[in-house]
Image (cartoon, rainbow, N blue to C red):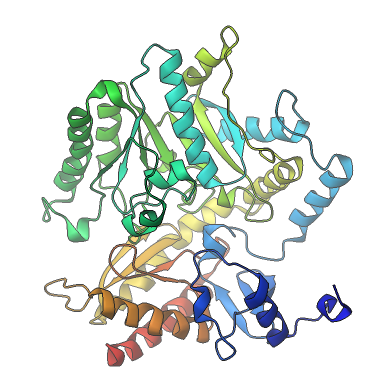
Length: 464
């Protein structure tokens, strides 16, 4: 490699060109980048903000993919990583253990609801969801029910891109290129009350209907074949679908009746996003498994986990049984140390209390956008909201594929970024703008997000 390739400066055009030539980015239309359409290069972060290589400042309104709970530039987390790396940088949790994995597992068990006391580490959320399905299959084989292998999840839901997790995912467009997928993944309706198929005038009745659709799927497939149900507390894809009152309680009853494991995918919703360490506590539900990742370290190091009920490990403790599954860097000492330091800051700075105090103000500010004719629905919880965009507020008519492409990718994404706000304009489902700011955000950041979205959406009305 020549010296010019080692240039330490952040010359925007230089890095953009190098990225275009060598970096294959995830979920990105690589062909859209050209000499006149450069790849943005983000070089620095502090608090809720990041800066690009040209010196421009942006509010990180999506928490760097729902991860940066404490914001950027937290030197304490970097110092925790460095201290651990100097002590022991890596050792696997295969056969052996190391102190930080033990300490973090114990701490997560204390934070999780009920008897969820067994922590299986991964390096991310998709791996945690993959692990839950594999564990459920083996659990039922070890307990004399080998035909229970299927998983039920919701339409439009995202649970990861690994082949098993992708089968659980309910977004058809993300799956077509990789079919055939792992068999046994069944889909049921989600809790999008704005577009309710039944009981559109009664939220509780709608929630009971949506839950009972899970029972119908179990009966249709045969209870003896269904191993688990996987649900997000607030469904991300589609735009922050919240659970109707009584929904999770009814799902719990159904799972108990048919001996089906209930998995809460809390990859996004845990670690303060909804004002609790685990949203299972917020919604008063004890699942059999929680999967989590993202905010566990506030993105300062990669880690994830499957947290399981005590009874689920019992057959693995007998005879010569073992869970024949694992990831090399799962429970990495450096990541575990960062996670512990992250949780220390949560406690010391009262992050959960802050989210619970500010969340109503966040919602109230967002609700002021309802006067825009393009805003159909605003939904979410905590620091996690989606704004659904419509052609007609009275009829709830949505945009067709061409219009959605023109609105979201042809205008909104770029306009919001240009205005200094990083968020997500997405059409996995109907067109939405999603916001999930760092949990440290105050009223000033909320006001900036709302005013920026108002300005950009108002201009967008002229482009439809």
